[in-house]
Image (cartoon, rainbow, N blue to C red):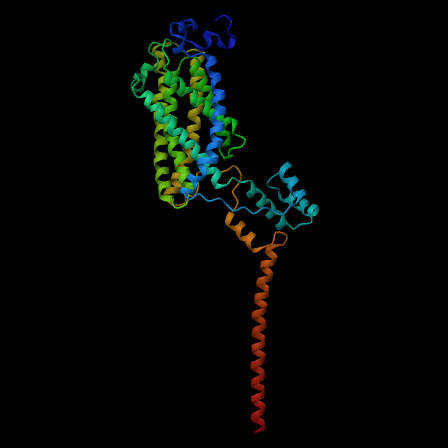
Length: 406
């Protein structure tokens, strides 16, 4: 143990009076070791490969069964100058930048605004991609929650939280708990590996913080044998994530509005209860208070609880978004998931864009064409009225002359 680097000093991560040598009382198969975490990397790569196969072969037929439709995209007219500005400077030019682009490209303001709108819509993820991501997470969370519940329901610390610390650190690790830990760690590692290609949502930064905090939490709790409390944290989080991803799946389909609304209400209740009530009153209370019945505070104690507090802060952030969704739902105005189902890019008015795409040529000015058609229509009506009036006056004049001749 003397060869361990300073970062693994026992007085940092273990309570006073406890040493790494105390772990030697456990058999090698029952003892968590930091090197075991290396298996999480190939598992993360394996999850990335499974995700590719899932998106290619399983998600499309599932989406068709739920009526998920792929959005028809209209590509803007080729413009190297506008494309260079779009990729290198900004996806949403300001008014002054539009004016400079007008003189640079020889286009009207309306044409430039339409080009950028179509270009942004082209980069927006389609419904099938959103559905595939939600379906993948749903199946993982469902599998993880079911497996975690099966391997924990017979354990003493599942019913009595004081058992999480009794006999610490000489607590043997079961094989099922080892794989439960490694699979969860590999899955969150795969989410970070795919973060550049997955849909970037408006809570992107919070999601990254959540994934990093979860990975650090799992890694640290495994190394210092906090496995009992760690398994409870994972099980608690997976319970509500299942409902969230299932609600998303039905939301992307057509004809499932009532099912989606029902799942959303159930998810909101489960999330608020588990994350704002159970997590702080049971999990954090266990690590902050009940653990002190066994040992005194130390560096690892503070580090572990800080990570839990970070998760709790994220829970409060997401709870605020969910409550706002519930308010809109009760008002009958809920149209989209405000928690994590909206891209970070401002959503364009798709219906207006489609109407413009159908009724105008990309190189013309739609507003002028529409105004010109309206003006021509009014002129036609006016002309017809004038012609009819002239005919009527002419006929009256002829009749008057005939009377005078008689």
